[in-house]
Amino acid sequence: MSRGLVERYHNAWTNGDFHTARGCLADDLDFKGSIDTFHSADALMAPLRMFQSMLRQTTLIKAVFEEDRAALLYDCDTVTPAGVIRTAEFFTTAGGKISEIRLVFDATELRKLMPPTPPG
Image 1 (cartoon, rainbow, N blue to C red):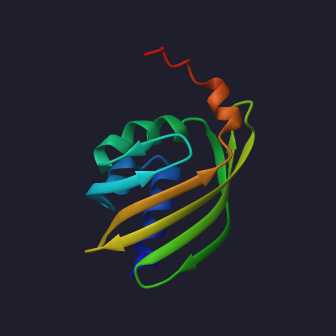
Image 2 (cartoon, rainbow, N blue to C red):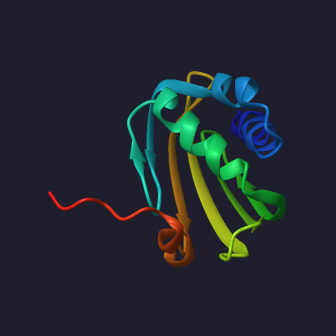
Image 3 (spheres, rainbow, N blue to C red):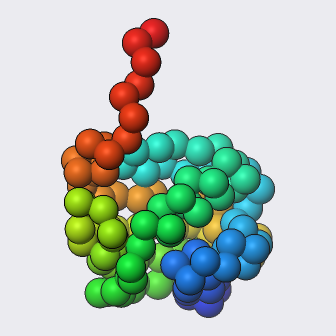
């Protein structure tokens, strides 16, 4: 069950098809990444679009699928000074949608590109 769904999501967002990517996600998606946390699929979409616009390409290294879980290991080749970012993404699926994503990567160089957070 998870394989087709996760592959469809990954291929969609990495190729700029955000309508298909959003359709793969549960409305109440639980997303935790190395930089951000989101509690809905809609909240994830703008940052995902922004990140995808920085990509030259992604290269899938390894994929592991179980009934309701999946893991992808891939390289994101970016146009930023961060260059190639090795990324691990872990998924949980339920009811035909991706319900949880854990995204792990070294965010050091990307954080340097982000505007400073105002004190507060």
